[in-house]
Image (cartoon, rainbow, N blue to C red; front, side):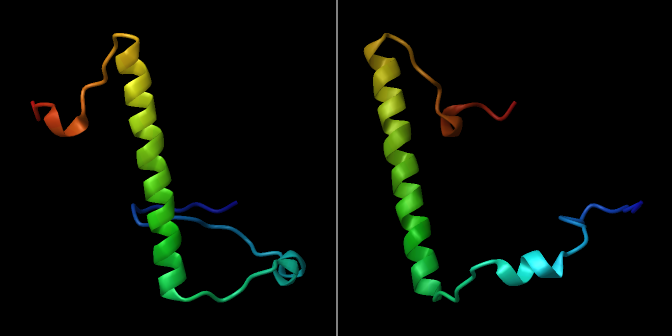
Length: 71
């Protein structure tokens, strides 16, 4: 049993060294990571636009987060 206190703990657990060595990891450059993030953001944005357009076609709307009051 682990008792963990604090707000900065993200993950705690034991590592199974046998499973860890079988994991196929590869080293990638920062450019590859940034490109993949850009592709994911673009895909998410296109899906959101499609969702908003579909709702708009049905007479519904979702208020955008940046237009809501902070009250």
